[in-house]
Length: 338
Image (tube, rainbow, N blue to C red):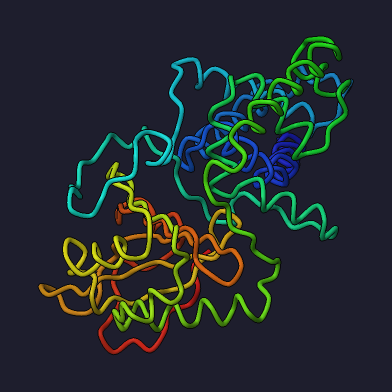
């Protein structure tokens, strides 16, 4: 019995080593942080139960990817495509702004870097991994048919050979190359439709200073200072609401009208979707201190903020990022989330 226990423990350890990269793969496939974690858990359970049938003709890693791919393809049969507000409707002028929520499964969801980006020594490999979970690329992936999506991720992001992808999908190299060509063409059509930030890894000095100025402007609710940081065509989104705004005038105008209760907020830095971000805590007039409100994801280009994306949902995002559900009024700082 002790031998069996040791073997089981060893398998658990071997499977667990692949959890982060598998979560990253499933997240790119599904566009949902919680569905990705469910898919990986399902993958681990299936692998554990069928390990005795694993004949070792491939590596454990590629076998796990095959299971994870099948799990994701099964989950995608419903045809739901996760999206951002600008993928679904036209920009709304401030004068017509209204907060209309859509169901949770409509939206592309944020994800902490630590849950999807395994530690790698090669800086170029790390940069590709970060770029492949950024919101604009994730949204583009969601427009691909599921199998094209899998091929593109495996070939372009994970650098698998066409023969390896063909074996995983049970198809031919020619079919894989054809799917990759079609996927690339679809992404090329979308290229340039929305601004995508160019962020250094790690952030350069100019970008660090920009974020420091942003924190000061937002926490001080200084719209003049914030305007100076926003690109003239900056985009603001607020899932689960389908409203999205373009331009610093409408963004700051919204913040001083419908968004006025956010005045006096506190920001805690987080690493999210390969981009800089913040957990926003709003003043809590009933309990005192600050209550969770949103996870902000910032896109930056040429010294300005081009994207300002606020994911509202305190009950899901803050635990996902390992963040507290309350800040005391006299708290000087909070440790950065995962």
